[in-house]
Amino acid sequence: MKDFIVLVDQLSDWQAFYPSEHLMLAKDYLFDLTLGAKSKRPTRVINLCKSYKYLSFGYYCSLLAESRAHRVIPSTKTLNDLSKKRLYLYNLDEVQEVVEEAAKKFTLNTSGVKSFAFRSYFGQSKDPLFSALAQEIFDQFPCPVLEIRLNLKKMWKIESIVPVAITDLNNAEEEFFGKSLENFSTKIWRLPHQGSPYIFDLAILVDPNEKLPPSDEKSLKEFERVFKEMGIYCERITRKDITRLNEFDGLFIRETTSIKNHTYAFSLRAQQEGLIVIDDPESILKCTNKVFMHNLMERNQIPQIPSLFVSDASPKTLAKLEDSFSFPMVLKIPDGSFSIGVKKVDNKNELEEVLQDFLKQSALVLIQKFLPTDFDWRIGVLAGEPLYACKYFMSRGHWQIYDHNKDENDISGDSETYAISDVPKEIIQTAKKVCDLVGKGLYGVDIKFVEGVSMVVEVNDNPSIDSGIEDLILKEKLYQKIGEAFLKQLPNYSPRT
Image (cartoon, rainbow, N blue to C red; front, side):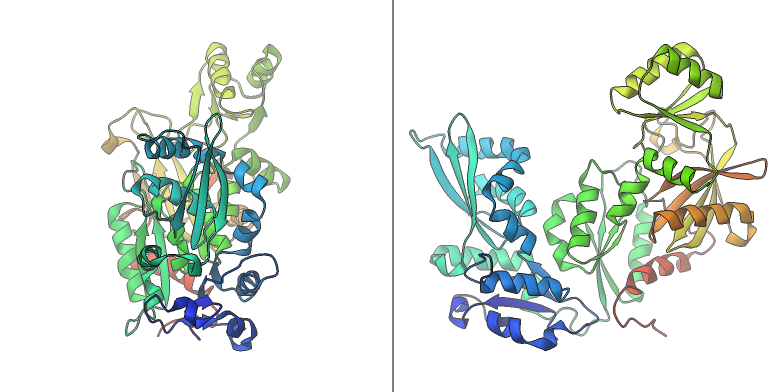
């Protein structure tokens, strides 16, 4: 079965472009039953039919591609979104600044222009003035060729976004389209991995400028080395590469996740494209919000640090907190990470001041009893099974593992790594139990072990894996286990001997 397919209505529609063994007529694609069979590698489809209207050949091709678990551009979601002008214009409010900047530069030396259009080819524009806007629109509506019309009323606005057939392109546009398609996915012109040992393409999402990334450079290189030996091709990508996700079989997020930044968008898009994803969007949603996790553990009777959520800083609330926990106590913004958005207060005045400040950022604030310990346990859990165990010690002279007031090289405390068999069973059992409630991904469970009780501090969907720390006991095997978590989800996968 072909790994890549370019769909056209007639072969003559493609005559201006490079010869391609991946070319297929839309009718053949629709009625070829063998294309629905499962394969080790997902099939990628570029749908270049003349029309994408509802119930047209183009629409049916995208619809059938999705039912066959093929990764198709454009998807039926994109087609349906673009058919509802009011809806897609509403969703484009966030690019208004880019629209105005591009339009003002374009009309700088002209007068009386109140409407104009440009075309996007896989997110690229012939006019550099529209490059950023073309990419923004393609990120939201992945479609081969789009015509974007801008109108001036009180301000420049997007008037319409319309798919364009390749048969409607002139000679210059055909040339640019060909180059754009090749840039978008050079694999269209060749079978992937010819003569190579790779059976899986993995994108690793990183932020080269992140101060506290989940994996340091040494561990990223170890991931790449071990994965390569397992037949996994790795490529690091960054936030600008969201439109390239369709090129890969899996996504491994190795930068700090948040609902508010691009990491969640990447995870969600990858899952929609049919990729195998760690961290999956459901895990990010659950783990990054302490409100959800607190209630989840409470309902399932999993021990956790005594906590309360409050929504105001009234005298009654302050008195209740003091009566429940006494001082000191710890305040947390529900979606903080790496000890950011966490403060300890020692008296009522500090409690009121910090609580009022946190309530400006979040409608709910988590208040916890202060339980001083020299360290927290971190149990790494992968697909329901314990992977590694560490003690993370508090930063020197500080009550948290991370002290953000210190020099970057001394921000965190020391660590010790243990074999799973050397960790108290109660800790391992608690970690497994809470992870079973969250999902089957990769998690790091922070636990305080106080007087024989394992109390969960939090569950991280994007746990640290740094060279010489989390991998100290398992070494190469830790990376192999994570690689296997991707490969095991492939149809007909069998481990190499």
